[in-house]
Length: 458
Image 1 (cartoon, rainbow, N blue to C red):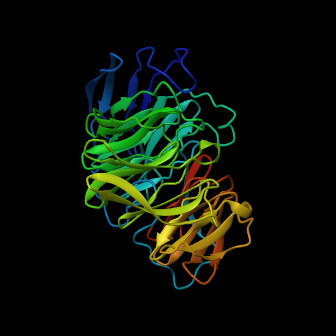
Image 2: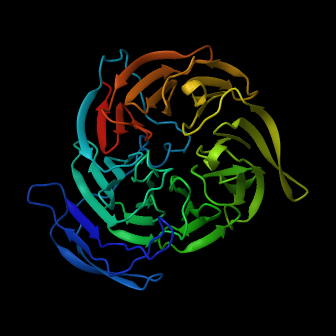
Image 3: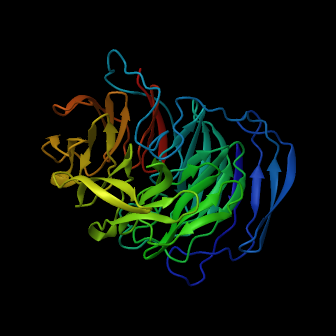
């Protein structure tokens, strides 16, 4: 195992969550112990300069012996899966569902709600241990730590963030051999996915969202896109993936907690995201605003990633109901046209999934209701009575729904337009489970408050 540790970040009197590098950080990489999973002891010295801070970092890096990653159809490389739509690939339902799942390993990966992601036979995690934010690579079969990179990230919680702790809420992104993370206070990092070496890092902005940073990065070709900054002061930003250079920025609103999508709408490639007060589409090439419509949720906590269905967009928010609309370009000007809107259901932090012509999810109304809507008309097909859970993370696999409630219960149900059709239920954690699960084949990677556990359906 290689261990990378970066020195302290120190506050300079700026608002909570805004930090700068105040003294020279050191990176030390320790080779694996004899017989452990890791890299060879051959070492070389690396020197990296952060132009923004003038800090020189000298690292003693270890020569690599680990095999390069190879991707396959069962990968879960980012927030909400391969296509950022909550759908898992490569799952095959058992003929008979077991009474209980099989636990294979559990690893402490730190506090936070980041979904573990899977590339080939490697699991990447992102969490908080003490005052460090820690990225890890684990062997998917054994849970052995292949590399572990930590940097110090002081963070002061406010009253609005106490309940959910100081751990990062953003899921890592794997793209083109690199791992990209967004820390709780807005630190953007890029790591070599094979070795854990820090490739580049952007310090926190001078402001932060009311409820801490939560959205997850998305890739678009050679760029990685994030909405950085804070309340009333942010920038939807496209970074060049290999260097961290800013390709473009859009500063029309502060960030919310929903993650951006990249989509081709009416022939134009664009970034669609929910911001602090709006739903927007910006040109993916240069960041120019194409269209926007107001979207102000209760307590300014827009948290749900947009769903793209053809040339149309479905969004929801806390006590805002659900709306489906179509962005249109008329005489070189963009506008949006509402298809339908309903107040029957509404989502706070639980992202829905679209299965064919049906939208499934958990509404926060009546203390948590599972529901199904007709996606074409917005008609409510069914709702459970309520009090299901405070939150449920929904993943779709073929014609099944995996509903991970925040109390550690995993509900398995069929996608059924006629009513809620539960198949079985499993207990998969002893502490709270707010992170989305990652599902690949018969494997379920579950993140609780501080651990990742591999369960299989045998």
